[in-house]
Length: 356
Ligand code: COI
Image 1 (cartoon, protein in one colour):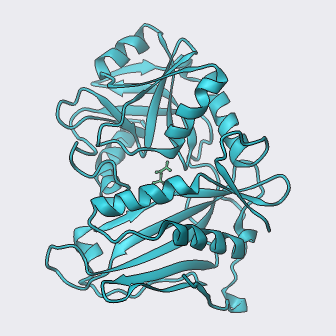
Image 2 (image 1 turned 90 degrees about the vertical axis):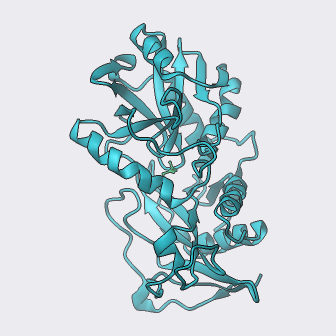
């Protein structure tokens, strides 16, 4: 693939934002390429960041045939830039594409597009503590037609956003409400694909629980409302007795998180035992009440590790670890971010360094 690089007008350069939040600011350039059955992937280019012009009948607006990814570029102490396990995001992107009946991208070309874009935009990778450049690839159905069928054309694009912590409260623990009347995803549905509809489905309840003073929703399985699945837009893990980390086994309706997978791989090296299991919410609440569960946290690219302060369920509250962030969450956060930012050696070969 030849990526054509379009020049950037001097007045297209934006100032670097003062206060980084999550996903509000975007760099000067973006990657785009298009697909049709006749031409395959074509017109790969990196050009100025800006709006698309799409016909109002475009399939993505009506039937939500779209997928996305999230990964980050981190500023290393030596000034170079690390990507973290980008290969895993690309594999998941293509798995999501298949589930949504969309055209897959070429994995190597997708990585090449990320590397070229981040290299050109390297000044957008923050060097503030806890900040990074969030990379958002997406694929949308662009056929202008209202028939319900897989689109015959697609647009693949990658945008970059310099970000601070995902939660305004930083690493502070968040209160979580366990939803037992609404669900996020069903087994056999699209819960294990990174498609916008899963996030849209979560918004109504997420807004409702804010009224009750909670910040995130813990999702249960759709069939029985009995098993723990995800928290907010993250995977969830519980810690028993400061040593045993337990997380729901992938069920088909849980997104296979890359942070989750990284924790499963590195936690045993830190002396923890790991268990993937079907977790009954009633057992979790019992073990929380007995104090056997010492910590709970979400795991995701955006927040990395997000400790839970308490769970609300059917008008009762279950405080976790005195409502404070615990040592396991802190150690996992520190260890993972040390590898991501290149502050320590990467024994797992998870990072790809871009020299700038
Ligand atoms: C993540 O934790 O990386 C997510 O999936 C959140 C993202 C949708 C903003």
